[in-house]
Length: 256
Length: 228
Image (cartoon, rainbow over all chains, first blue to last red; front, side):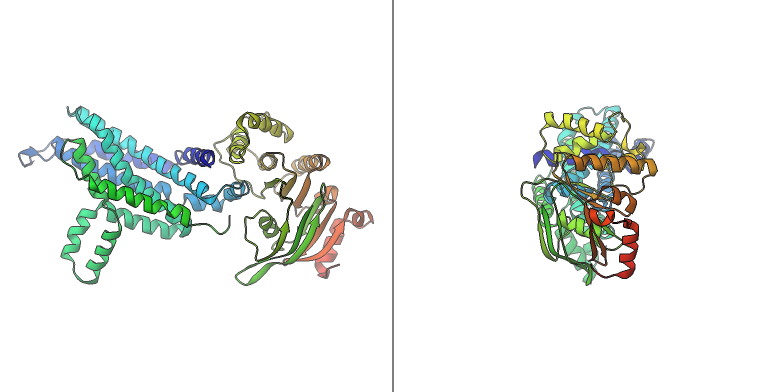
C-alpha cells in the first residue's frame, strides 16, 4: 500500500506542478508582496511607521496565508473527480488498489502542491525580512512555516475529501466557505457579535465547526517575530486534520 | 474458463444488461458485438469489478490475472511510454528489477521501444498500443480489450489485429469488444451479438466459415432481434 500511495502521489504531484494557475497566482502574490514592501509613508502607529517591518511583516504573513489557502482550493478542487472522469481510475482499480490508497495518494499530491506554492511565497517573505535587516527571523520562520502548513493542508485536505463525494461545484463552494470562515475567523467572530438573530446563529455555528486558521496564522507570525503565541490552536488544528482525513476512509466511490 | 451467469445491471430502473450468460473457453478469443448502448462496456466493467452488478455470477479462476485495455486510454501526458508502464507496474506490485526488463519487452512487442517522446506527442494508434502493453503487465492469462481498434487508421488497425493474433497464439484468453466487424471476423473463435442488454445471437468460427460474413450475420440479427 505504501508504494502504491507513493507512486500515485508522485505522478499526481508532477501533474499538479504543471498547472498554470499555480504559477499565475504565485507571481501575482509575489508582485503584491513587492508592492507591500514599499516603505514611503509618514503615518505612524504606536510610534512605528505603518509600513515599518513588524506591521508589514504581519500584513505580508496574512497575505501569504490567504493566497496559500486560495491556492489549496484551486489546486485541490476537482482533481479526484477528474481522475474518474478521464477513466484513469479504471486502470488503478483493476490493479486492486484500494480507494483509500488511491484517494490518499491524490490528496497527498494536492497538499504537497499547495505547500510547495506556499513555500515559494514564504521564501519571498524571508527575502523581504533580510532586505529590511531582520535576518534574525529567518530561522524562526522555518517552524512558523510548518504551522502555516497545517492551515493550508487543512484547506487542501478538506476540499479533496469533499470532492470524493460531492459534485465539483458543491465541493468548491463548501471549500471556499470553510476557507473564508477559517482565514477570517477572528474578523467574522467580531462581525457575528454585531449581528443578531438567525444570521448570527448561523455564523456562530460555522465558526464552531471551522478551525481558527487565522489564529494559526497569527501564532506562526508571532513565533517568527519572537512574540508570545497561542500553542493550543495547533493541537485543535491537528485534531481537525485527523477528523477530515477520516473522510478518505469513509467516503467511497461506488463505481470507477 | 470464464463463466458468466444471469448477469444484470440497471441504471435508474432501465436495464442495461439483462440476464446475460456466456462462457469463454481458455485460449479463445470471445467477441462482444452490438450497437451503441447494447451493454457491452457495462458487461466488461462488471467483469472487472469497476461497476457493481445487480445480479448474476461471474466465475473467473482464482489464480487468473486479468489485463484490461480501455476504449479511450488516458495516460499522464508528461510521462514517456516506459514511465507509464513503470507506473502501472509498481501499482501492480511487480518487483522493480523484473519490471524494467518486462516494460522493455512489452514496448518492443507493441512497437514502441524506439519511442522516447512524451505521451502528449503520441498518436491515437500509439496510445492504443501502449494501452495494450499496460494490459499485458504481469503476463495476465486473460485480456479484456475494449474497442482496441477504435480511432485507428487502416495501417494501425492491421498492426493491432496482428498483435492480438500474436497474443492469441501465445495462449491468452481474450474478450474483445469492437464495432469493426471485419477485424473481429479475422481473429474471433466465438462471440455473441447483444442488443439492449440481451443476447440476440451466439456464433462460432464455424458459423463464419459457412459463407455468411459476420457483417451479414450482424445485420440480420440486429434487424431480426430474436435470440438463436
